[in-house]
Structure formats: C-alpha cells, structure tokens
Length: 249
Image 1 (cartoon, rainbow, N blue to C red):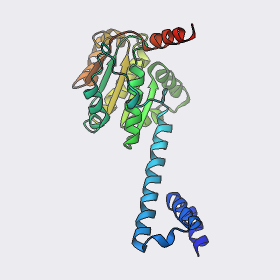
Image 2: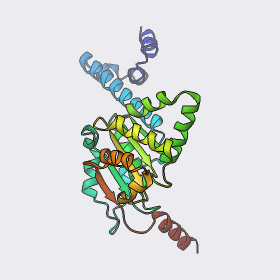
Image 3: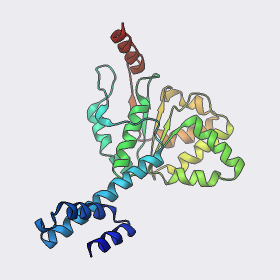
Image 4: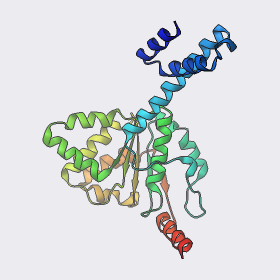
C-alpha cells in the first residue's frame, strides 16, 4: 500500500509529500506521528516544496546578470546608500504600490548589483521579475519586429511585476528605441514597477531620450513619485582590483 501511495504522489507531482513520506518510511518514524500530525507534516512539506520551486522558476525566468543578495550589500561611508531605505525596499511594498526606483552613479559603483539584489528579493516573495540590459533589450525588440514576435515580447514585459532596465543611457536613443521605450513605460505606468540604473544623472535623461514631446511623456511617467538612489564614491571594481594587487605583491 505504501509503495502504491508513493507512486501516486509522484505521478500527481506531490514531490514534497513524496520525499517526506518516503523518508519517514525508510527511517521508521511513521509511528512517531498521530494521523493529524502526519497529514500536517506532509502538507507543510508539499507547501514548502512548491514555494521553493516557484521561486526557482521566477529566478530562472528573470535572467539576472548577477547572483546578488541584499545581505551582501556594502554600506560604506560615502557611498550614499541608506540601509534603512534599502531595507524598506526589501519588503517589496514599492511593487505593490507600482512605484519605480531610479539608481544612478558612476561605473562600478554597484548600481546593477543593488537592482539585481532587489530583483532576487522580489522573486523570493513570488513576484514576476525580468532583468534586461537596456541596449540589448532594444536590439532584441528590433529583431522581434523583423520576425513578427514583437507583440509577444512586449506582452511578456508588461506581465512582469518588476522590470529592471540596467545601464540606461549609455548612448542616445534612436527613433525606434524611443518608441519602444514609450510603449513599455506607457503599458506599465500605474500598473507595475520598474527599476532603472544609469551612469547618467536623471537631469540628463531628457537629452538621452531625445524628441522633446516623447521625452517629456516618458520621464513624467518614470520619475513621478519614483524613489531615487544617487550612489557616490569610488568604483568597487577598482577597490577590489587594488585589494587583490596588495594581497599578491
């Protein structure tokens, strides 16, 4: 009977229950539980297993550039990173409120890492997240227009609870990229959240986008009630490189 029960659990994809029941059978611990305790134990195991698989699926679909964790962020003096603010972001209430986060600062200062860490945190809470290098995203969407999959790609972006656009503004937007950005921001405005990282100060984004009317419309939707992190200090990559040289010399 136990073998049949295990097989049915496996076929029904109750993998948490399957592993827990099998372990208890093999260890001879079934007699240690009352019937209601055993049911509670199996349900809890299945619940945890499905939650973990859901998180793993979200992380895989997000396609993060970095494996980042909020616990590993550095709050060095002079970086202008408010730990209390980051901890509030970690609660992901900004996603529930459809708010944006804009992270600016010089290259190597940790913008992408913070954005990715917040994205990982959102995945752990069950939110759908997508990470893109901004330039690569526009290149991908241009190819999608050519092969007829553009609407599908745009719909996929719109479904994400959190969209991360990394390295925005490395080069001025051309006409097609500007139109794509407008469509993405318009679809998400008031319905979902976006994190944007950039080496360029927000005050200069207007020039990056180009075409005054479109730039005004995009920035009005992005910046309104957005949280801002303006990182300061020396490149963390440079510091890491210098530390390695000191260790080896």
